[in-house]
Amino acid sequence: MPSPAALKYNLVAQKARVLRDTATDIRLRPILNSHTQIYYHSALAMFVAGWETYIEELVRNFFDVTANPLDPQFYAVHSLAKNAAERSLKQFNTPNADNSRNLLVQYTGYDPLNDWVWSKRNINALATRQMLNDILQVRHSFAHGFPIPANSWTQTPTGKIRLTAKAIKDVDALFKYLVGVTDAGMKQHIQTIYNIVVSW
Image (tube, rainbow, N blue to C red; front, side):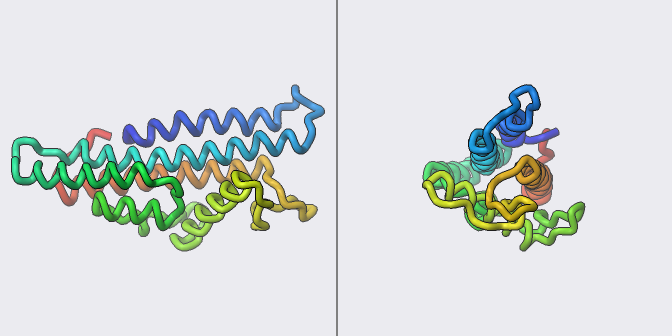
């Protein structure tokens, strides 16, 4: 079962998929390429927002399941750590690979790095992190009015730099993968370190 954080991510991702699907809906033809790009940019921004929400909520989920009010000394330290995490979560607004990983390591002790090996696509952890960072860079560029960076996935077969339905499907697949393995890794971390069986 997914964590509450993953369930929130899934709700946001569903909305992003509606945007992607609308851009390719043949009932809306003809649709200008510039209009299609608006849907794709919105979908990509929504996937990134979902990922940011996921990381923030996963930290909160961690504190929720590891709280032990029956142990006053542990609970006092736990409460201080939770308050410090909440302050950091309010400032967390660039969920790239390093920031996401650092937030998880610093406040939960869970390092997702080894779990971010996308073996199904034959992509190691470094390449997975680079893909995540590239997505954040693309989101940053159009959010601030800059041209989209030229990456392999932001170029059409004819060499034009723009988002495509395939690019958004790949973004979707990456975030779906990252949420799934990070969820499983956090669950294992909580069970191993805290000897708590997590219901999600």
